[in-house]
Image (tube, rainbow, N blue to C red; front, top):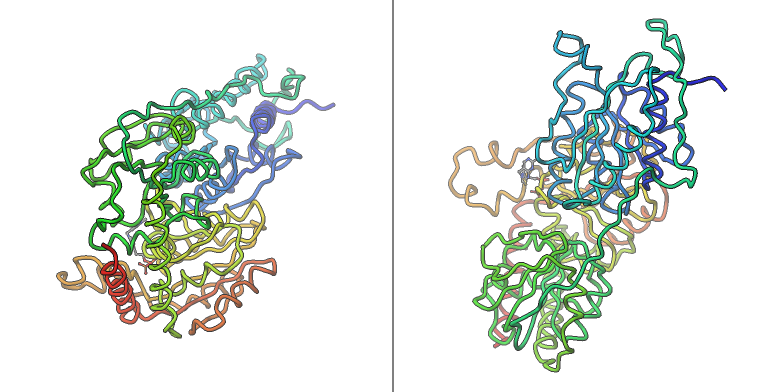
Length: 561
Ligand SMILES: Cc1ncc(C[n+]2csc(CCOP(=O)(O)OP(=O)(O)O)c2C)c(N)n1
């Protein structure tokens, strides 16, 4: 067998070791210094690779896959500003505890700081946001580097999954000498063959294993009377949590990203809590699990002057109003399971009844419309069979939270709530197969249009609420006060999104009425391929509908004590 050159040997060992740690998906952006890594990952028989041109998009594509899969995802890029383009995705992965593994190629140290082309200081560029950084030395034929490469990968994988702290992004910066392609002479440099073994453990297992500590129950002291759980996105078994809540007879308020919708969970809290907590729905204490949002109105509950307990496996501090009275770093399910079963059933049934009444009232209010609005489209999605719905920041995730009741998974980048990386997050989430829907505003789509430059094979039906800019700003104080409101905030662009789709080779269609919308979207999900479905929305009409929904909510509340 012909021995590989040192860079090829190094890249092969790295790719193989990552696979032994569960990596099955790698997002590659083109470049020369990273050639050995790109080729090694692509040649690995059990790692699927996808190519995304723009590294900012590539980072989010990897993130989308992290959100739906259970194993770390690798993103490979070349040297220079390529790496810096991962920062937004690294920030989101840090806040959302996602195992994103950034693998950047670099020049060897003796070729740095001399003004060489496409060279920046890549050491620790993500600072504290990365759970772990390692500068991997360039390979040569002089010694056996195998345990160094494989051990570094073992530690990277373990750190990304929370070993030693909590899950999150890691960064391996790997220096490569030429040739970076698998030849001994690339026409510029002649490389010595690497003479040592690069074999992994004969067991086919990882070089070094790490054990995830089993989460334990926290102390649930001082909780008397009627409890209520608010559940957001987090690290827990959703079905088991639901069972515990039912056993305790506590109402569950389930945000869109909690994964708990579709059963007895209350989903209309945004409207039920419009003017604070109705007396008949007041709990004696509140237990928050996971990151709760995006509705601000839930703050009426999580800042009530009653004991407020927050349970998170990784010790999150999700407390924007500083009203949590006790934080518990523990497993939420185990903690609830440690309590005796409840006998007080009244609060749970009161919330479930109020939720049903509110849902009917909201449905009546939305049912009047033929012209699409953001809330109207979100409520239509409830009747569509999808596996996952990727919702963009701004109004889409808020409308999904208030109006989409569905057992399917909702994915959204709410760690930093950016409107960036949306198209790519959707493609990453679709890479597992299944029926993927993506709902966004027009600006979010435009922000990551470069995400369409990919050979990703997953199918996504993009539904774009095209209200000609950022409709969210109509609901914010600057709508009243700022001169230049439209240009400075709404950002009207006048672009034809269907033409944009055509430019990227994506099929598109337009829906100007709500009639038959669910059927059309379902039909698109039935066939494979990516489609952009543009729904023109008039901002004025949309705003009026939101006010009408609030009026309907107040009428329901008036009937509650
Ligand atoms: C990367 C980033 N830049 C800017 C913002 C601020 N921002 C929040 S919402 C928004 C407008 C989004 O418009 P669109 O996607 O069309 O959705 P709509 O507001 O109409 O629902 C902007 C610019 C942000 N959240 N993230």
